[in-house]
Image (tube, rainbow, N blue to C red; front, side, top):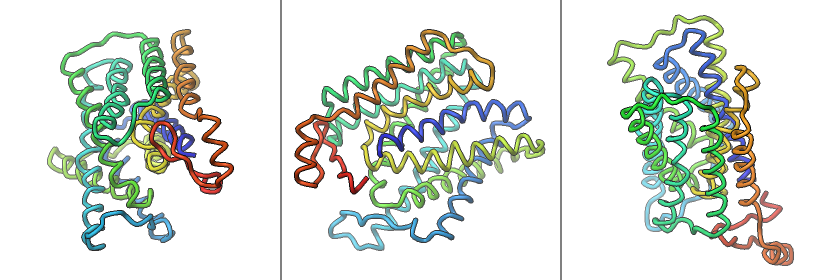
Length: 324
């Protein structure tokens, strides 16, 4: 279930590039796109929390010796900071780099983050780099490289490359910090706080810089709605739910499915052709997903016999069938 949720999140995020391109063709500016995306997502998630109170609940944290009110306040502050600082910064860096360099090369630099997340998680002691996970990381990274290089284009710009790598580093920190609170807040509540924080930062920036032009037509609003609902609300909920079940490095590796989805959707909707290198890269990414799902037969047999979760070789605890 955790892997499926991460793949769903990657697919939804992967569609955002196509939605964004169609929104730009409809007259939407980058500033308006970001502001409406996060603002509308925050409103939608807030409505879910108001109408479905059960979605606010999460398992209690393990902060022994800390009063519940203090613990809740700390977690809420971290979640808001994830949006106000982490997500808003990452999105701004990404779209600033996009103005300076080719999109495929930008994505290639951005997708160094699964390696960064995995290395950082291992160094911090949160994950173990097992042979299975290492093989999946190599396959996913190689597949992503083939998918993006197969798109062609140069467009290298030193400042753009620096901004793109800064976006990758920012997203790495975002994932690692999210992993510290994802078990203490329900996915809907965490996503709502992140979106609210990001919308607040981008709204304040829009006010300082003269506001955002919202005079585009209904086509622009349609694609913005698609970005907010599919590529933000659904994508974020699935990502946090998947991160909670898989851990940061596995979630990052599975997220390399995103450029595969982007390339496929661009082929179907924008008339762009998939090259043999891109097809081979997509196969490698899918192979990494299969590798991550392989488990020793002995572990499965012990789980069936005991009815309890058995720790996997990579240090993660696999849920029982009933928990799934």
